Image 1 (cartoon, rainbow, N blue to C red):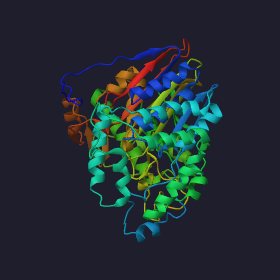
Image 2: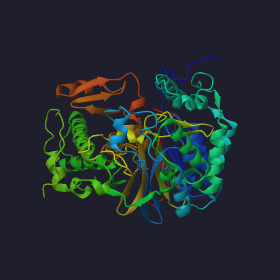
Image 3: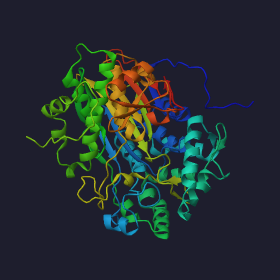
Image 4: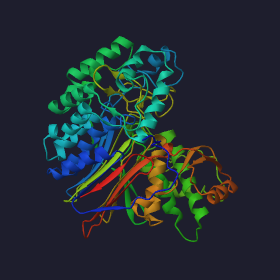
Length: 535
């Protein structure tokens, strides 16, 4: 039977999922099953998150891989913990070195935007500190998937095909291993077609056996180093060997009686916190749907221009995180929101695309985890015979030495991937996240306001038609975004652009826990191949 796996003439509805012993929500059903199997084998939420993340590097290589970065927020034993596993620029990565290669700005693809990948170290660090099962057991399902193959899902195919055409435009031998690994038939695999990678399986097995060190200090590091030397890249094994993920204290803002938590900079979660903080300052009285939506868009715009101007390594930031989240500064920014759309400009507070997964277990532990190659497959660089596709996070660096996020050796760049978490009165409510590049803080604002102000359940919050600010007064909206709202926003000065596809509007997962009964409820993203599995 022949059919189009991306054609759906009738709308469908997914119900909120409920469970009592555990829950796993990911953008790929097979990866969700892997996490659930780990829970049912006696693992905790952290074990399930690691196993799902490793599996996602196989079944959704269009968004992440072994060469990704990662962030996590973990609720365990009544406390929140944050992990920043974004890697720094290589020691040889200077503004002068990039400009000497003929670039006026950081390139998006190729060897130069690759920074030290953090995902394998994140898996190992989470397992060592909080896991229950042996680390090798957690990666075994991913090894099997890579070795035996799996059927490619519809949205993954769509992104795969886009990457094939993107990288085909480059006349550079360094891209050849990507095609050898991910397009061996001269095209992207089709929906339902089996894809496997023995090299990917071998790399995951080496990472499992060495708790990640094979990637940074061993045989995989040697192969990465050799490839970069051969093709004129800047990353070296010494850069890999020096890397350690960083445990951090999550940062938060208060919104509608809840505390919303994000990873601090260099992550961009502070943008979502600023926007929510502005909305909290403005209150809720007497607002109609158009006014509500207008305010949310304007607050997000104002927060975003601040973030793009100031966010970089936390120690290098001026102003500080505390100054940017201060109530008086957020009130000042909120005061700029009027009846009409503004062309946003950053303030001065010194006055005074990705995979996301959520897991939970029956003991109350919960994990918000995200890992990403950045733009689709990332740099387009794959280390031959390993299945390791490398991220292109360095593309966010500026080559303007006066910019806060200027490229420098050993520096971590502004990072789009952000796991989120909600607490209330010191108790866990649950993890949430919306992957998708620069959409992510905007997605966080939209699902949080939908749940905590509009009182929608997790699935309904994810189903809501989304908007995305891109620049100035321009706001893109999904194909099914209501016309009456789009027209009303246009009358307020917004330049509304309705897109034909939903893929750029983020892909999220949410799990919430009732503090009295312990019952879990969750939703998964309708814009991807996702699944939420309860137990």
